[in-house]
Amino acid sequence: CCYNDQDIVFDNPLRQGDVLQMIQNAQKINRPLAVATKTRIAANGVDEDLKEYFAIGGTDLKVAPDFDVVVDQDTVYQIMVGCREKDYDRLVANTQNAKVTAWWDRAADIIPATGSKGVAIEKVLDYYQIPVSKAIAFGDGGNDIEMLKTVGHGVAMGERNRRCEGNC
Image (cartoon, rainbow, N blue to C red; front, top):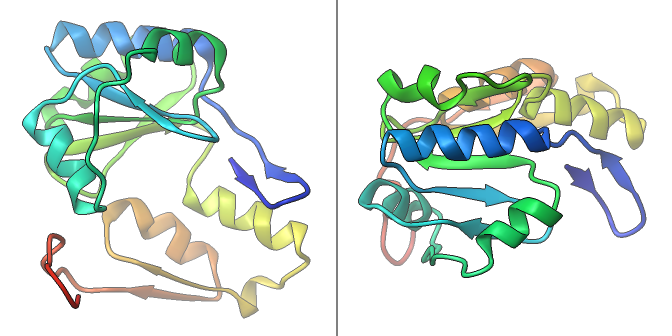
């Protein structure tokens, strides 16, 4: 979901049925997950991988007591789950429009199969009528590759300590 103060520039949510299926799939492999809506992140549990996934971004993930309500009533754009590459197919099994992207070997992001950072960049550039040649993007993970290829100037940053303290 890409938006500004006035408009939704691009809206590409996960299908409700796919979200429910992936919750079941994650339960089968004993993994909690977090869902991202336009306004919040809600988790149905926290394991060490999911905790560290969010800690990398400076967030202390907590279990949402209203997780089922969020999944039932809100639009879900992304699912985050601690896992390994061997779990990817199991997580998206029996879904209609979902794919796994990853930037860390202990977790995955699940998004619509028709979406990506690259697609989002295209929509935003089109909305603001910015030529691709004038766009720049920075990325440091495998999930950034399509975005870096979409813009006129893509900068791949090297690996560094993601959990740095103080000045990073």
